Image (cartoon, rainbow, N blue to C red):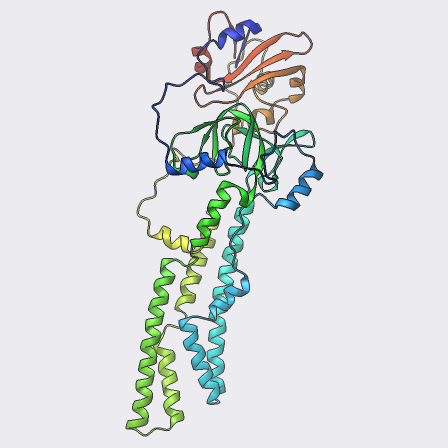
Length: 463
Protein backbone atom coordinates (compact mmCIF):
# COMPACT_ATOMS: atom_id res chain seq x y z
CA UNK A 1 0.00 0.00 0.00
CA UNK A 2 2.74 2.48 0.80
CA UNK A 3 6.28 3.33 1.87
CA UNK A 4 7.65 4.25 5.30
CA UNK A 5 10.73 6.42 5.58
CA UNK A 6 12.03 9.83 6.44
CA UNK A 7 11.30 12.97 4.47
CA UNK A 8 14.82 12.80 3.05
CA UNK A 9 14.25 9.26 1.81
CA UNK A 10 10.95 10.37 0.30
CA UNK A 11 12.80 13.07 -1.62
CA UNK A 12 15.36 10.53 -2.77
CA UNK A 13 12.59 8.29 -4.01
CA UNK A 14 11.51 11.06 -6.41
CA UNK A 15 14.98 11.77 -7.83
CA UNK A 16 13.94 10.98 -11.37
CA UNK A 17 13.23 13.23 -14.35
CA UNK A 18 9.81 14.64 -13.59
CA UNK A 19 7.33 16.87 -15.34
CA UNK A 20 5.88 19.98 -13.63
CA UNK A 21 3.08 17.65 -12.53
CA UNK A 22 5.42 15.44 -10.52
CA UNK A 23 5.02 12.53 -12.95
CA UNK A 24 7.90 10.77 -14.60
CA UNK A 25 8.66 12.38 -17.91
CA UNK A 26 7.44 10.36 -20.90
CA UNK A 27 9.62 10.04 -23.99
CA UNK A 28 9.83 13.24 -25.97
CA UNK A 29 7.25 13.43 -28.73
CA UNK A 30 7.92 15.04 -32.10
CA UNK A 31 6.58 18.52 -32.63
CA UNK A 32 3.23 18.54 -34.38
CA UNK A 33 1.57 21.20 -36.44
CA UNK A 34 -1.45 22.91 -34.98
CA UNK A 35 -4.76 22.54 -36.78
CA UNK A 36 -6.85 25.58 -37.68
CA UNK A 37 -9.19 24.84 -34.76
CA UNK A 38 -6.26 24.51 -32.35
CA UNK A 39 -4.97 27.92 -33.42
CA UNK A 40 -8.45 29.39 -32.96
CA UNK A 41 -8.65 28.00 -29.45
CA UNK A 42 -5.16 29.30 -28.60
CA UNK A 43 -6.03 32.76 -29.95
CA UNK A 44 -9.16 32.68 -27.81
CA UNK A 45 -6.88 32.24 -24.76
CA UNK A 46 -4.66 35.19 -25.76
CA UNK A 47 -7.50 37.58 -26.63
CA UNK A 48 -9.86 36.45 -23.87
CA UNK A 49 -11.53 38.90 -21.53
CA UNK A 50 -13.84 38.08 -18.68
CA UNK A 51 -17.55 38.86 -18.52
CA UNK A 52 -16.74 42.20 -16.88
CA UNK A 53 -14.04 43.26 -19.38
CA UNK A 54 -10.77 41.77 -18.09
CA UNK A 55 -10.11 38.27 -16.84
CA UNK A 56 -11.05 37.74 -13.23
CA UNK A 57 -8.14 37.34 -10.77
CA UNK A 58 -7.57 33.96 -9.07
CA UNK A 59 -10.60 33.26 -6.92
CA UNK A 60 -10.60 32.29 -3.26
CA UNK A 61 -14.16 31.00 -3.43
CA UNK A 62 -17.61 32.55 -3.22
CA UNK A 63 -20.40 32.45 -0.70
CA UNK A 64 -23.84 31.09 -1.55
CA UNK A 65 -25.29 34.62 -1.53
CA UNK A 66 -22.63 35.92 -3.96
CA UNK A 67 -23.16 32.92 -6.24
CA UNK A 68 -26.93 33.49 -6.32
CA UNK A 69 -26.46 37.14 -7.28
CA UNK A 70 -24.06 36.23 -10.11
CA UNK A 71 -26.35 33.41 -11.25
CA UNK A 72 -29.23 35.87 -11.59
CA UNK A 73 -26.94 38.19 -13.58
CA UNK A 74 -25.22 35.75 -15.95
CA UNK A 75 -27.71 32.89 -16.06
CA UNK A 76 -27.21 29.15 -15.73
CA UNK A 77 -24.06 27.45 -16.99
CA UNK A 78 -25.77 25.50 -19.74
CA UNK A 79 -26.51 25.87 -23.42
CA UNK A 80 -30.09 26.86 -24.27
CA UNK A 81 -32.01 24.12 -25.99
CA UNK A 82 -34.01 24.91 -29.09
CA UNK A 83 -37.37 23.61 -27.93
CA UNK A 84 -40.47 23.85 -30.07
CA UNK A 85 -43.59 24.99 -28.13
CA UNK A 86 -46.18 22.24 -27.76
CA UNK A 87 -48.87 24.37 -29.39
CA UNK A 88 -46.70 24.85 -32.47
CA UNK A 89 -46.16 21.07 -32.71
CA UNK A 90 -49.94 20.65 -32.72
CA UNK A 91 -50.46 23.38 -35.33
CA UNK A 92 -47.86 21.77 -37.59
CA UNK A 93 -49.95 18.61 -37.52
CA UNK A 94 -52.88 20.60 -38.91
CA UNK A 95 -50.90 22.15 -41.72
CA UNK A 96 -48.91 20.78 -44.64
CA UNK A 97 -49.60 19.43 -48.13
CA UNK A 98 -51.78 16.52 -46.97
CA UNK A 99 -53.69 18.35 -44.22
CA UNK A 100 -54.23 21.26 -46.64
CA UNK A 101 -55.88 18.93 -49.14
CA UNK A 102 -58.11 17.58 -46.38
CA UNK A 103 -59.05 21.12 -45.28
CA UNK A 104 -60.16 21.85 -48.85
CA UNK A 105 -62.34 18.76 -48.82
CA UNK A 106 -63.83 19.75 -45.43
CA UNK A 107 -64.63 23.28 -46.62
CA UNK A 108 -66.28 21.95 -49.77
CA UNK A 109 -68.40 19.44 -47.81
CA UNK A 110 -69.61 22.10 -45.38
CA UNK A 111 -70.24 24.53 -48.26
CA UNK A 112 -72.45 21.89 -49.91
CA UNK A 113 -74.18 21.34 -46.54
CA UNK A 114 -73.02 17.72 -46.32
CA UNK A 115 -72.68 18.02 -42.55
CA UNK A 116 -72.07 14.32 -41.70
CA UNK A 117 -69.30 13.91 -44.32
CA UNK A 118 -67.70 17.20 -43.35
CA UNK A 119 -67.78 16.29 -39.65
CA UNK A 120 -66.16 12.90 -40.29
CA UNK A 121 -63.35 14.50 -42.28
CA UNK A 122 -62.85 17.12 -39.55
CA UNK A 123 -62.60 14.41 -36.87
CA UNK A 124 -60.00 12.58 -38.99
CA UNK A 125 -57.99 15.77 -39.36
CA UNK A 126 -58.01 16.53 -35.62
CA UNK A 127 -57.32 12.89 -34.68
CA UNK A 128 -54.25 12.73 -36.92
CA UNK A 129 -52.82 15.95 -35.44
CA UNK A 130 -53.61 14.89 -31.84
CA UNK A 131 -51.97 11.47 -32.14
CA UNK A 132 -48.81 12.93 -33.65
CA UNK A 133 -48.67 15.71 -31.01
CA UNK A 134 -49.21 13.32 -28.11
CA UNK A 135 -46.49 10.87 -29.17
CA UNK A 136 -43.99 13.67 -29.86
CA UNK A 137 -44.57 15.32 -26.47
CA UNK A 138 -44.39 11.98 -24.64
CA UNK A 139 -41.08 11.15 -26.33
CA UNK A 140 -39.74 14.60 -25.46
CA UNK A 141 -40.69 14.17 -21.80
CA UNK A 142 -38.90 10.81 -21.64
CA UNK A 143 -35.70 12.31 -23.10
CA UNK A 144 -35.92 15.32 -20.74
CA UNK A 145 -36.22 13.00 -17.73
CA UNK A 146 -33.14 11.07 -18.90
CA UNK A 147 -31.14 14.30 -19.31
CA UNK A 148 -32.05 15.40 -15.79
CA UNK A 149 -30.73 12.11 -14.40
CA UNK A 150 -27.38 12.60 -16.19
CA UNK A 151 -26.60 16.17 -15.13
CA UNK A 152 -22.84 16.86 -14.83
CA UNK A 153 -21.42 17.98 -11.49
CA UNK A 154 -18.47 20.16 -10.52
CA UNK A 155 -16.25 20.36 -7.43
CA UNK A 156 -16.44 23.98 -6.23
CA UNK A 157 -15.18 25.88 -3.18
CA UNK A 158 -18.13 27.69 -1.62
CA UNK A 159 -18.84 28.83 1.91
CA UNK A 160 -15.24 27.93 2.86
CA UNK A 161 -15.57 24.24 1.95
CA UNK A 162 -15.25 22.00 -1.10
CA UNK A 163 -18.54 20.58 -2.34
CA UNK A 164 -20.04 19.00 -5.42
CA UNK A 165 -22.83 20.93 -7.13
CA UNK A 166 -24.74 20.86 -10.38
CA UNK A 167 -22.36 22.27 -13.03
CA UNK A 168 -25.23 24.41 -14.35
CA UNK A 169 -25.05 26.48 -11.12
CA UNK A 170 -21.44 27.63 -11.68
CA UNK A 171 -20.91 31.38 -12.05
CA UNK A 172 -17.94 33.57 -13.06
CA UNK A 173 -15.62 33.86 -10.08
CA UNK A 174 -16.20 30.37 -8.70
CA UNK A 175 -13.14 28.41 -7.54
CA UNK A 176 -13.29 24.91 -9.04
CA UNK A 177 -11.12 21.81 -8.90
CA UNK A 178 -9.82 20.50 -12.24
CA UNK A 179 -8.55 16.97 -11.68
CA UNK A 180 -7.52 14.03 -13.84
CA UNK A 181 -10.52 12.22 -15.27
CA UNK A 182 -12.96 15.09 -14.82
CA UNK A 183 -14.61 17.27 -17.45
CA UNK A 184 -13.93 21.01 -17.53
CA UNK A 185 -17.31 22.44 -16.39
CA UNK A 186 -16.80 25.95 -17.80
CA UNK A 187 -14.11 28.14 -19.37
CA UNK A 188 -11.63 28.51 -16.50
CA UNK A 189 -8.27 30.14 -15.91
CA UNK A 190 -5.67 28.09 -14.01
CA UNK A 191 -4.59 29.69 -10.74
CA UNK A 192 -1.34 27.74 -10.33
CA UNK A 193 0.24 24.58 -11.70
CA UNK A 194 -0.20 22.71 -14.98
CA UNK A 195 -2.52 20.02 -16.30
CA UNK A 196 -2.86 18.03 -19.51
CA UNK A 197 -6.19 18.62 -21.26
CA UNK A 198 -7.83 16.60 -24.02
CA UNK A 199 -9.44 19.08 -26.43
CA UNK A 200 -10.36 16.53 -29.11
CA UNK A 201 -14.06 17.44 -28.89
CA UNK A 202 -13.21 21.07 -29.72
CA UNK A 203 -10.20 20.89 -32.03
CA UNK A 204 -9.97 17.29 -33.22
CA UNK A 205 -6.41 17.05 -31.85
CA UNK A 206 -5.73 13.50 -30.65
CA UNK A 207 -2.91 14.42 -28.23
CA UNK A 208 -3.52 16.25 -24.93
CA UNK A 209 -2.36 19.84 -24.49
CA UNK A 210 -0.33 20.95 -21.47
CA UNK A 211 -1.91 24.05 -19.93
CA UNK A 212 -0.73 26.47 -17.26
CA UNK A 213 -1.83 29.83 -15.86
CA UNK A 214 -1.44 31.45 -19.30
CA UNK A 215 -4.04 29.10 -20.83
CA UNK A 216 -7.74 28.62 -20.39
CA UNK A 217 -9.24 25.10 -20.39
CA UNK A 218 -12.55 25.13 -22.24
CA UNK A 219 -15.93 23.67 -21.46
CA UNK A 220 -16.26 20.43 -23.41
CA UNK A 221 -12.65 19.33 -22.81
CA UNK A 222 -11.37 16.77 -20.30
CA UNK A 223 -8.46 16.74 -17.87
CA UNK A 224 -6.29 13.67 -18.50
CA UNK A 225 -3.39 14.38 -16.13
CA UNK A 226 -2.72 16.57 -13.13
CA UNK A 227 -4.81 18.51 -10.66
CA UNK A 228 -5.15 22.28 -10.24
CA UNK A 229 -7.54 24.89 -8.95
CA UNK A 230 -9.13 27.20 -11.49
CA UNK A 231 -11.26 30.33 -11.59
CA UNK A 232 -14.42 30.25 -13.70
CA UNK A 233 -14.26 33.01 -16.32
CA UNK A 234 -17.10 32.19 -18.72
CA UNK A 235 -20.30 30.20 -18.33
CA UNK A 236 -23.12 29.07 -20.61
CA UNK A 237 -23.38 30.79 -23.98
CA UNK A 238 -20.33 32.99 -23.23
CA UNK A 239 -17.99 29.98 -23.33
CA UNK A 240 -16.03 29.06 -26.44
CA UNK A 241 -18.12 25.90 -26.75
CA UNK A 242 -21.35 27.86 -26.29
CA UNK A 243 -20.50 30.36 -29.03
CA UNK A 244 -19.57 27.53 -31.40
CA UNK A 245 -22.81 25.67 -30.65
CA UNK A 246 -24.82 28.85 -31.28
CA UNK A 247 -23.24 29.22 -34.72
CA UNK A 248 -24.06 25.60 -35.56
CA UNK A 249 -27.67 25.96 -34.40
CA UNK A 250 -28.14 29.04 -36.57
CA UNK A 251 -27.54 27.00 -39.74
CA UNK A 252 -29.01 23.71 -38.56
CA UNK A 253 -32.45 22.57 -39.65
CA UNK A 254 -34.83 20.58 -37.45
CA UNK A 255 -36.08 18.68 -40.48
CA UNK A 256 -34.38 15.43 -41.32
CA UNK A 257 -33.78 14.14 -44.81
CA UNK A 258 -36.81 11.87 -44.61
CA UNK A 259 -39.10 14.83 -43.85
CA UNK A 260 -37.70 16.76 -46.80
CA UNK A 261 -38.29 13.80 -49.11
CA UNK A 262 -41.78 13.27 -47.69
CA UNK A 263 -42.65 16.91 -48.28
CA UNK A 264 -41.65 16.63 -51.93
CA UNK A 265 -43.59 13.37 -52.35
CA UNK A 266 -46.69 14.82 -50.71
CA UNK A 267 -46.59 17.94 -52.87
CA UNK A 268 -46.29 15.77 -55.97
CA UNK A 269 -49.16 13.51 -54.82
CA UNK A 270 -51.37 16.49 -54.00
CA UNK A 271 -50.67 18.05 -57.39
CA UNK A 272 -51.55 14.79 -59.18
CA UNK A 273 -54.70 14.42 -57.05
CA UNK A 274 -55.88 17.93 -57.88
CA UNK A 275 -55.32 17.32 -61.58
CA UNK A 276 -57.34 14.08 -61.39
CA UNK A 277 -60.13 15.83 -59.48
CA UNK A 278 -60.34 18.62 -62.04
CA UNK A 279 -60.37 16.09 -64.89
CA UNK A 280 -63.18 14.09 -63.21
CA UNK A 281 -65.13 17.26 -62.45
CA UNK A 282 -64.90 18.61 -66.02
CA UNK A 283 -65.60 15.20 -67.56
CA UNK A 284 -68.76 14.67 -65.49
CA UNK A 285 -70.09 18.11 -66.39
CA UNK A 286 -69.31 17.82 -70.12
CA UNK A 287 -70.08 14.15 -70.80
CA UNK A 288 -72.94 13.18 -68.51
CA UNK A 289 -74.34 16.64 -67.89
CA UNK A 290 -74.24 16.02 -64.14
CA UNK A 291 -75.21 18.85 -61.85
CA UNK A 292 -72.45 21.03 -60.50
CA UNK A 293 -73.18 19.80 -56.96
CA UNK A 294 -72.91 16.08 -57.80
CA UNK A 295 -69.79 16.57 -59.88
CA UNK A 296 -68.11 18.51 -57.06
CA UNK A 297 -69.05 15.83 -54.49
CA UNK A 298 -67.51 13.14 -56.68
CA UNK A 299 -64.34 15.22 -57.11
CA UNK A 300 -64.03 15.54 -53.32
CA UNK A 301 -64.31 11.76 -52.93
CA UNK A 302 -61.55 11.27 -55.50
CA UNK A 303 -59.39 13.82 -53.67
CA UNK A 304 -59.78 12.15 -50.27
CA UNK A 305 -59.11 8.59 -51.43
CA UNK A 306 -56.22 9.43 -53.76
CA UNK A 307 -53.85 10.88 -51.15
CA UNK A 308 -52.36 9.24 -47.99
CA UNK A 309 -53.73 11.83 -45.57
CA UNK A 310 -51.94 10.54 -42.45
CA UNK A 311 -48.59 9.81 -44.10
CA UNK A 312 -46.60 12.56 -42.34
CA UNK A 313 -48.31 11.89 -39.00
CA UNK A 314 -47.48 8.18 -39.23
CA UNK A 315 -43.80 8.92 -39.93
CA UNK A 316 -43.54 11.46 -37.08
CA UNK A 317 -45.31 9.13 -34.66
CA UNK A 318 -43.01 6.25 -35.62
CA UNK A 319 -39.91 8.36 -34.94
CA UNK A 320 -41.38 9.59 -31.64
CA UNK A 321 -42.11 6.04 -30.50
CA UNK A 322 -38.56 5.07 -31.45
CA UNK A 323 -37.18 7.99 -29.41
CA UNK A 324 -39.18 6.90 -26.36
CA UNK A 325 -37.98 3.32 -26.76
CA UNK A 326 -34.33 4.44 -26.97
CA UNK A 327 -34.70 6.59 -23.83
CA UNK A 328 -35.57 3.43 -21.89
CA UNK A 329 -32.08 2.17 -22.81
CA UNK A 330 -30.48 5.42 -21.51
CA UNK A 331 -29.97 6.85 -25.02
CA UNK A 332 -30.56 10.59 -25.42
CA UNK A 333 -32.22 11.57 -28.72
CA UNK A 334 -31.66 15.30 -29.16
CA UNK A 335 -34.01 15.48 -32.14
CA UNK A 336 -36.19 13.00 -34.01
CA UNK A 337 -34.20 13.30 -37.21
CA UNK A 338 -31.22 11.76 -35.36
CA UNK A 339 -33.03 8.40 -35.38
CA UNK A 340 -33.32 8.58 -39.15
CA UNK A 341 -29.61 9.45 -39.41
CA UNK A 342 -28.53 6.54 -37.22
CA UNK A 343 -30.77 4.13 -39.14
CA UNK A 344 -28.58 4.69 -42.18
CA UNK A 345 -25.30 3.96 -40.35
CA UNK A 346 -23.59 0.74 -41.41
CA UNK A 347 -20.63 1.01 -39.02
CA UNK A 348 -20.27 3.01 -35.80
CA UNK A 349 -16.70 3.50 -34.55
CA UNK A 350 -16.12 4.31 -30.87
CA UNK A 351 -12.99 4.70 -28.77
CA UNK A 352 -14.61 2.82 -25.85
CA UNK A 353 -12.85 -0.48 -25.33
CA UNK A 354 -13.78 -3.42 -23.17
CA UNK A 355 -17.13 -3.71 -21.46
CA UNK A 356 -19.48 -0.90 -20.52
CA UNK A 357 -19.38 -0.36 -16.75
CA UNK A 358 -21.19 1.67 -14.10
CA UNK A 359 -17.97 3.43 -12.93
CA UNK A 360 -18.73 2.08 -9.48
CA UNK A 361 -16.59 -0.19 -7.28
CA UNK A 362 -17.45 -2.05 -4.12
CA UNK A 363 -15.77 -4.51 -1.75
CA UNK A 364 -17.47 -7.86 -2.26
CA UNK A 365 -15.11 -10.18 -0.43
CA UNK A 366 -11.80 -10.04 1.40
CA UNK A 367 -8.87 -11.43 -0.51
CA UNK A 368 -6.03 -9.50 1.13
CA UNK A 369 -2.76 -10.71 2.55
CA UNK A 370 -2.36 -8.64 5.70
CA UNK A 371 0.85 -8.11 7.58
CA UNK A 372 0.86 -8.94 11.27
CA UNK A 373 -1.34 -6.61 13.30
CA UNK A 374 -3.33 -5.23 10.33
CA UNK A 375 -6.78 -6.01 9.02
CA UNK A 376 -9.30 -4.71 6.48
CA UNK A 377 -10.22 -1.73 8.67
CA UNK A 378 -6.65 -0.49 9.06
CA UNK A 379 -5.86 -1.16 5.39
CA UNK A 380 -8.76 1.02 4.25
CA UNK A 381 -7.63 3.84 6.55
CA UNK A 382 -4.12 3.63 5.08
CA UNK A 383 -5.58 3.69 1.55
CA UNK A 384 -7.59 6.78 2.46
CA UNK A 385 -4.38 8.58 3.46
CA UNK A 386 -3.29 8.44 -0.21
CA UNK A 387 -6.43 10.36 -1.22
CA UNK A 388 -7.96 13.73 -0.41
CA UNK A 389 -10.26 12.44 2.29
CA UNK A 390 -11.60 15.89 3.24
CA UNK A 391 -12.95 16.51 -0.28
CA UNK A 392 -15.66 14.76 -2.32
CA UNK A 393 -14.14 11.73 -4.13
CA UNK A 394 -13.60 12.13 -7.88
CA UNK A 395 -13.10 8.56 -9.08
CA UNK A 396 -14.59 5.13 -8.46
CA UNK A 397 -11.63 3.83 -6.39
CA UNK A 398 -11.57 6.80 -4.01
CA UNK A 399 -15.36 6.65 -3.72
CA UNK A 400 -15.11 3.02 -2.60
CA UNK A 401 -12.21 3.60 -0.20
CA UNK A 402 -13.51 6.79 1.41
CA UNK A 403 -16.97 5.28 1.72
CA UNK A 404 -15.71 2.19 3.55
CA UNK A 405 -12.89 3.65 5.67
CA UNK A 406 -13.21 5.27 9.10
CA UNK A 407 -12.17 8.81 8.16
CA UNK A 408 -12.06 9.98 11.78
CA UNK A 409 -8.74 8.17 12.16
CA UNK A 410 -7.33 10.14 9.21
CA UNK A 411 -7.60 13.32 11.26
CA UNK A 412 -4.51 12.20 13.17
CA UNK A 413 -2.51 13.09 10.04
CA UNK A 414 -1.90 16.30 8.12
CA UNK A 415 -1.60 16.10 4.35
CA UNK A 416 1.35 18.31 3.37
CA UNK A 417 1.27 17.60 -0.38
CA UNK A 418 -0.67 15.41 -2.74
CA UNK A 419 0.12 13.86 -6.13
CA UNK A 420 -3.12 12.90 -7.94
CA UNK A 421 -3.50 9.81 -10.07
CA UNK A 422 -1.46 9.97 -13.24
CA UNK A 423 -2.00 7.60 -16.20
CA UNK A 424 1.78 7.47 -16.67
CA UNK A 425 2.80 6.47 -13.14
CA UNK A 426 -0.56 4.85 -12.31
CA UNK A 427 -0.47 5.81 -8.65
CA UNK A 428 -1.49 8.48 -6.16
CA UNK A 429 0.82 9.72 -3.45
CA UNK A 430 0.87 12.11 -0.51
CA UNK A 431 3.36 13.53 1.96
CA UNK A 432 1.85 13.25 5.44
CA UNK A 433 2.67 14.46 8.89
CA UNK A 434 1.76 12.47 12.01
CA UNK A 435 0.22 15.05 14.36
CA UNK A 436 1.00 13.25 17.69
CA UNK A 437 4.63 12.44 16.89
CA UNK A 438 5.54 15.03 14.24
CA UNK A 439 7.01 12.34 11.95
CA UNK A 440 6.77 13.16 8.23
CA UNK A 441 6.44 10.27 5.79
CA UNK A 442 5.59 9.56 2.16
CA UNK A 443 2.57 7.41 1.35
CA UNK A 444 1.49 6.03 -2.01
CA UNK A 445 -1.34 3.89 -3.32
CA UNK A 446 -0.95 1.74 -6.43
CA UNK A 447 -0.74 -1.82 -7.66
CA UNK A 448 2.10 -3.75 -5.93
CA UNK A 449 4.24 -4.06 -9.05
CA UNK A 450 4.05 -0.28 -9.60
CA UNK A 451 5.34 0.42 -6.09
CA UNK A 452 8.06 -2.25 -6.27
CA UNK A 453 9.48 -1.06 -9.58
CA UNK A 454 9.91 2.48 -8.17
CA UNK A 455 11.24 1.48 -4.77
CA UNK A 456 14.70 0.78 -3.41
CA UNK A 457 16.20 -1.35 -0.66
CA UNK A 458 16.43 1.68 1.64
CA UNK A 459 12.68 1.63 2.18
CA UNK A 460 10.52 -0.53 4.34
CA UNK A 461 7.47 -1.54 2.33
CA UNK A 462 4.03 -2.03 3.84
CA UNK A 463 1.11 -3.45 1.92
